[in-house]
Length: 446
Ligand SMILES: Nc1ncnc2c1ncn2[C@@H]1O[C@H](COP(=O)(O)OP(=O)(O)OP(=O)(O)O)[C@@H](O)[C@H]1O
Image (cartoon, rainbow, N blue to C red):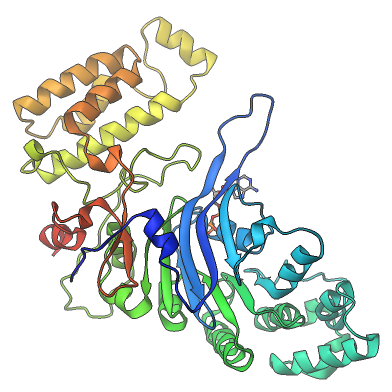
């Protein structure tokens, strides 16, 4: 696989696709909980750039909390962007207000995950589907009723359902009602936020088929947010993979599934059960949990868990397990640095007793007790231990970075073209000075 052309953020911005319906540029959405001291915001979406083409389905995947819903809501202007642009027909919708904003909200709609809670149980199906038409004062009341009945038929329900209530319908039928409501004002763009995750598997296929039929009939463009990668593989033309508010990889669906480029995508795909029992593909276990989006790591957002994190030259031959444990040490030091000790724990610490973090000796014993540690690594570990014991995590981390840090923590990556021109991945390892993520994982996991 070729992987060489470098795209900086600026390149992605100018690399506009002629068929783009929506161009997202350096978009950030931070949740600032205010408070007297301001505080550190949650960086839910942290500088993403990509295009959505007219008539396509772009999938958005990634672990819970990585920012998918926030990104979808920001495109629709249900959430305020902190920075960046969302261009539709050349107009930045993040700057709209008044009637222009209302027009964008008509044209860009959302289907939610849970059809149980997204429909008002006190309204009839007719009223629910008609509500957006009423709000936008669409034509006459009679024409609205007529339109709603047509929409019910379009989504596979019956006209008579107009006078019934949501509780009389199954989960799949309720999702059909939501879809009819979404289509009432003839949008061009629809964000589908996990539209089938709450449904039985048999019903999921029916709703997916319906969404595909509606797309063909009305020329809709979808952003399809999902956990279930097999559904994404089925319905999406292209896929964007998110981690900690960043797009780590984007590319045509089949190519991305067959030839993932980014180490994070590799690990996500390796978690899908393998249909071929003779396959020798091994599951990639990621250590730890995603970092708190209030305190993302420096450099690459995936650096704290990446199984292919670049090592400094002198440690390239180090035992893989020892390298993994060194990484765990760094993550623990970062957590200790941020943790607030309770008053009781402060007292315990002051009189030299263990706090809830356990002693640093215990940590070292757990991490390194059963491994052979070369002298150069041991001398750095000793120095880190001294600072950590004095609860000077900043100094301990500084020593860690001097000894074991690499470009992964020091610099944010660029976007690199991998595979064909529209497949991009955000990882330092695509630089020609390093082995590619796929080559490193092949060596370790196959
Ligand atoms: N209104 C809010 N205020 C503060 N933080 C928020 C708010 N909404 C979301 N977040 C935080 O922003 C981050 C991204 O959340 P988001 O719901 O966009 O992720 P997601 O990928 O859609 O997750 P899921 O798959 O669980 O729905 C999370 O850390 C979440 O806790």
